[in-house]
Length: 571
Image (cartoon, rainbow, N blue to C red):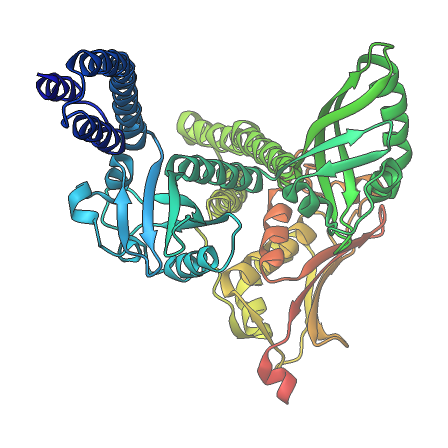
């Protein structure tokens, strides 16, 4: 009966640990052995009941311990689940690596970073996923982990098998198992991309500043120190060791502008509205070239209304200034062209109309009064008609040549010419006119002298000078045309007359298109002054020049100079 009760008690203690169960079993067997020799049954039952009571109490204790163990197991399972969730779903990649770099454990994020399944990565070397450029850094990183107890870090990039490059920051330390280490991998690709964007933006801004020649600066007024961009340093021609203070800035300013800018900064910028907006001139420090710059900035004040900081930009506007000067020059040229056109139309409207009116008047007389005209009358009218025709022809020739030269329609074809031949063939019609007027024309030109010139331009120049000489010389006077070598390998031409001459004012206006120098000749011949302008243009084409010597009633001498022919220079 007692044995049965003990066995039942032991069966109810199915959760008891091994050592405690063994102890109880030994105690129970000893108890039965001691009571199997005929011991009083009543005593044995009492002891058994006590033992059963102890066992029941112990059973309760064991059941309570079992409940606590079950609860602890559940908490451990929950903790394990949370650990697995944290391990796998964290935003950081976790790896356990062996001493030779094999992956022993990896979380989900780590697998995603490497672009593989977790199962595929186990026992694979981590280094095979590192780019060739980063492998030396990674190998050193892994070696340092196993040779030091300190935390190690490095930055690597993965092999280029992703849509975009992946950059990682690796942090690692040796584990309790000295043959393994734990490393974390943080994807810093986005940070790299942002840094790259900032670099690109900075490069773009720098290129724009260089293209616009726009530099930036910040001037600490209290500390008397300024900092500037590379572009501004280039504009000023200063190096990195240049001491940047207010005084050093003024030293870069052109001497003619230093006092102006010092006064402007003191009176206008600091003293008034705090706005810097000024064009001024500088002398670059490195090459000493003069440059124009445009500075714009604003002064910042503290709560006491004291100037503490000035920020702004400076642009190199030298090219713009040159352009403005070029525009002014072009405007002047345009005004001159407009004046030339006005002169041209004035000649057509006035000077050309006058000779035609005379010509028309004479032909009208002949048409209406031919039957009443004597032979002498017809002779006089014929002479007048001939003179008018010659004057009109000369004027029209000059007008046409003037129009062509303004349109660059006249070709400039210099060649070696015999001066005497050109002069004689050009002035022959004028000689006849001069003889009728009672004027002697002489030449003083060596037979073999040659000149390099455009034949048509040279002939036009001689014709105009000789025509004017005959026109403004009274009967009984003379005209002399000469050509002689000068000491500077040039030929000097001169057309001298004994005519009415000119005063200083007329001489100064001879080659000005907008000046009215037209006057009638000694036989009332018309004159516009256009021929002299043509001559001036022609001689300038040759690289020569024209000048005049004259006095009232003492005649005039027109000079022009041209280069000698090579034949003459070698003779």
